[in-house]
Length: 440
Image (cartoon, rainbow, N blue to C red; front, side, top):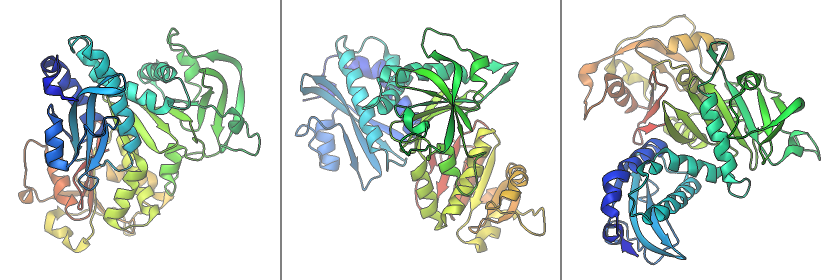
């Protein structure tokens, strides 16, 4: 195994393709990416890893689970010709081990093919093409031909930008190999009912988007059902009427419906759509870029940071994701020590004498409007809204690097408990007191 630096075409790769690769990884997984073209000595010195001794391994989780080392391997038969390393930091790598391995395998295939032409062709294949290859192989392995997943990916790219009678619309599709379970046979249930369509269809990359057809599935309670050959013959309607505060994550991921190798494709808002499997990992496409997030791990982080009960975590995430989908900018702060609020806040506002609670379904619509007000909203760990539209004392901000006032404010508030910043483009960034900021 050679250091990639000594491999033919390595300079061409670094000159043209590396920017695509680093950008796609950073956006997809979040965090920062460090590239090293001489990993053999560097990884041995830094982490005690002898990658030449284990050539079939391409991913290592190091530094107590805070860093993922992903190798870029050029393969030859059963061996490895050369390799570089990518160190991913400043993000939550826990629970993504399987995804890292699938990504590394897709990268190895792409690099091995690129090496034939000394990486002079198609540098863009290390961008979104690589991410979509990863996603298709992640869901396809053991269940589907990954090329059929890619057909569905291309279809939903189009659907997310399709308008019906002048309006964008939501829609959804479930891909399954367990049709009998959705049909409630052999004692199985998927928390809904199956309705055969009068006329089915086969999904194909050669067909255009029939927007009148796709409009008839709302992607929230109703979904078209397709088999592994992309034959679509049924509509599935869930029993649940809408997402609940107390069970938001389960409702959002359809955890009682999406099981085994099932794959959920869903357009959730204008130019925004996602793919979710039974393991709780969501691949979202928004603002022209892919993002992977593990909702179970996000819940765990919130719970551990604030030491709160599960109903609080579910309620908080309900509002965070709702505001994000509606592109409503907001800063939410849950302090661990409420006695320190007045040290960083110049003004507080209350709307009712009896406070609203993020745990009470009755308060949902009023809270959505309050939480999207200018300024920061403060929520106690019992769920009550302490204040909204708060003005933060900017004299206490310590701005490092280039960042907006909102990020600086959220970083300051997050030093006591947890702050969440939701941008107008729908980006969500967590600022926990016990960990680095995390984009979800």
